[in-house]
Amino acid sequence: MVNLVSLNKVTTPQAAFICRDIQLDDAALASLQTELTPVAYLHELLAQQFYPDAVRFLARALPKREAVWWACLSARSVLSPDTPPVQLKAIETAEQWVFKPLEAHRRLAELAAQAAEYNNPGAWAAMAAFWSEGSMAPADVPVVPPADNLTGKAVAGAVMLAAVLQQPELAQDKYQFFLQQGIDIANGGNGRLWQVGIAN
Image (cartoon, rainbow, N blue to C red; front, side, top):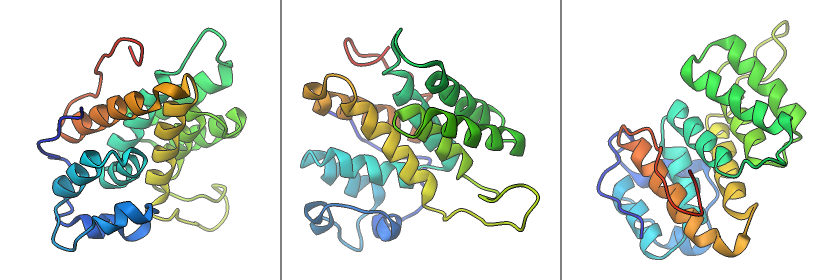
């Protein structure tokens, strides 16, 4: 059971504003009312066990650095001795951007995501960092800013992939754990929670 009391780092007052540019299932949208706060709406999604929608919502609601950190944690939880080095590198470059959000680190994250081939949580954590700010175009051409919702989409992709990549029969438990991590981050924690068999 996911414990939700507050989301201190989420500054948007209405859940509907957060949902304006994310894709949610019809059942999740049916629970969205104009006056609902982010906490109240996330609580509703969790109560109905709409976990993928809860991930999409929280990934969009979090500030971008915190959201990318959440993606990194979920990506690290599925690392194994067989994980290709390029996937680990993608996570490391995303973490590097979180610790020091410099333009050079953002550009390295893009390269790492490309090398990891976009089929794993680490690659999407790195893309979340790349899409956080700046330009999507090469450095020597006119600026093409990323859409504001792209980081949230990439973070949600990383978290959802991590939930189903290994032992998909445990996806519900993993979703709950990852969401607890995200909520901890949203309240100023580091998200480094621990659960046997799911993350360490």
